[in-house]
Length: 126
Length: 484
Image (cartoon, rainbow over all chains, first blue to last red; front, side, top):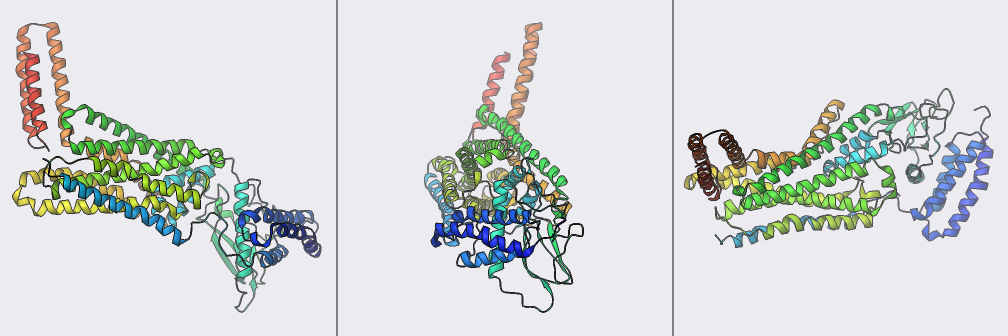
């Protein structure tokens, strides 16, 4: 890469262009849904793309320190109040998971006990 | 990729589900292995950027990791220690924390790409000036991902071997089980309640193997199908879980039957089998359905193939409970046979000991995979051997069950020998009738009677009910008639 990256320009362009688009989308979505990953996934992805394309145009490496600072600021502004849970597929919370698992296990033990009891009773027939 | 996520899953803490679903792991591996999902980043050439790929699944994972990274960077407290350090950063694939100067930090490789091994380590060097290492050629900040895909070809080969081993194992199991079923249905002399339970057990194993083979052949090498995520592959997965439950619950039925026969009823014969059918075929629907509902609601991934979820315990929990209960029943049986019956009913006790022996061998064999799975060795060679052993234990179970319950069964062997000798003598008679006089056939008569007598003798040692003797007497009569 011959030309150096003009960091000031890059930072400014990110804020003026990418961030403004992101802001518009998020405002349209409404603050209630900012923590809903399914809703915000597309917009967040576009923001990422935008910064990457800008970096390419300006012959900057992506990601870089400016991108880090930019995104941390975005997170502070928009996602600071969200629960820090993964956005990937997640198991349900333990309160839901445990009954789901305990029920079949107990059921299995009960069913086995039932069969033992019934076969005991039927055993009188020779 | 194949052995990659395969290995990583095996190394995680909660592994019992992974054990049983190592074939699923294999599936995941193989899916990602398919050429259509290649990485577009040339990480060996550091001048290129890790641009996110067009593949939406990979891209989504990367964006997701990016989000989590910036969340962490936002919320984690600032670096407090003294001295120079490199700032926390997102390098496009992985998140790196604040690192003291002059230190190499490492973490597990990501699993975005088919040829990346999540058990290998990616590293990043923070130099003495407090800046991240820049690659000398391009002068861009660079993390070392070269180890992530350097051994992939060997692992690929091994994953292929394991894949074909699994298919062969299930095919062999189906074959041997069908032969055993044929033997059990053909020789009416063998019929008794225990054999009826065996037939049901074998049938459930046959169905299980068939579903597994269908899964391995239709879904695993077919990422297009997985991406489309039709309902049919989830239905297949549902039936797969159901048949897994059936396998283990039929083993439990066998154990309960023996327990009732020996410990509770003490050699009284006739039990009603309705409850066994209900437990063996009916009950496994419960965990399978609950798993399907929970999966659809909370972890609805494509084709329900992921093994990274505790929801799999919905099916494996009852299976392990059944194994444990079975094991305790069998231990109780052995205890009773050894202590109480030894003095009073010596002959029957020996007889039942033989019957129990087969089940006692099988239950630990079937269950041991759940026990040793969590301890996959770190060493590469030991890990490979471990993988092979686990695969054999898991995919050749049907063959094992058929061998122990049928081919190694004394009664079955006796029945087969009788049948074989009968054919031989009939064949001999037919030849003699073809070419000669009555006198030859008279000699044939006397020859046929002797073997039958021998069988009659043998049968005294190995019967569980009176039918065996009757049948051999019938055979004696029959052969006497035909040769006269």
